[in-house]
Image 1: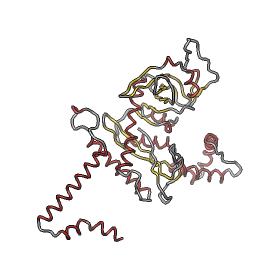
Image 2: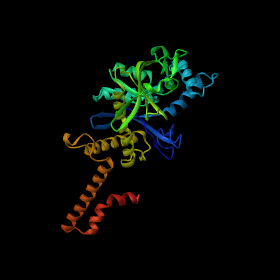
Image 3: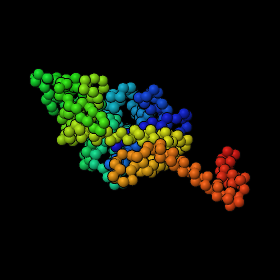
Image 4: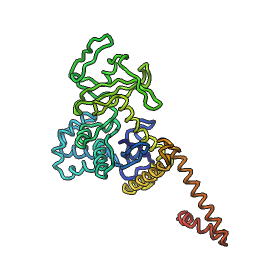
Length: 366
């Protein structure tokens, strides 16, 4: 599983901190954007690896090289026009040694996803299905999954185009739906699907009204789409899931996709209990070590939350917060018992306090 999160900060002295897009209240907070990978098997969900997204710096550096080598050519401001220009001039820019190093340092989220996939395979992480958010769904990422013989599942952006000649749909009265042009956007196709075509699918405690469809996506090939509404009236927002497995039904695709929800709870627990975004180190290597230590702490706590026997079921028997509080209580109990034993052996209270708080006094003295 692949996903990204924001680690917001105040101050610009951290390595690679920058303004990142955020759908929340603050659209461009000063932050780091780590991209972790997660492994899920049965009740176990563990963070595995991480890469740091640095796309804002990539944009600035690319502009600098582009203006140096093509001084008379304006740099477009829209994303599509920029991508078109980069595709045209990158072969020329890559002949410059300094620019040739940029792809190694500054990579898109899709490229980071490929690096995480390769690292997981290299470290023999057992998995057969890749689950990701819509930001990672790119042709090169799908090609790598196909090369590595991995199935994949993702959300699909509603502005993605479908090949109209790859499917045929009918209206509620049974008449064929006429579609003009070689492509149609997902957002334009969904209103054409008759309400009677949707079927209820229940996964866990949640029921969705879904419509599966096998289509071709430009650059990705033949795929299975599942349009999913939260209510039988088919109102409000909807999600569109996509997978390379055209033989999977809607229930299996939804079941697999909801398994990425523990990533969200990991971010909540990691930030709320383990200080995932509370580091104060400015060096990128030190920050990376901090994240790795949070991964290790979370993994041990998650194991402590799982039932000790299969007969107890597969759901966690307590939350990460409860496990953290139990660990804190155990440390306090150990400290009290240690102090009690020292006093029983005749150590003076003043000397005991001096010993216990020696490091704290030294730090405060600085």
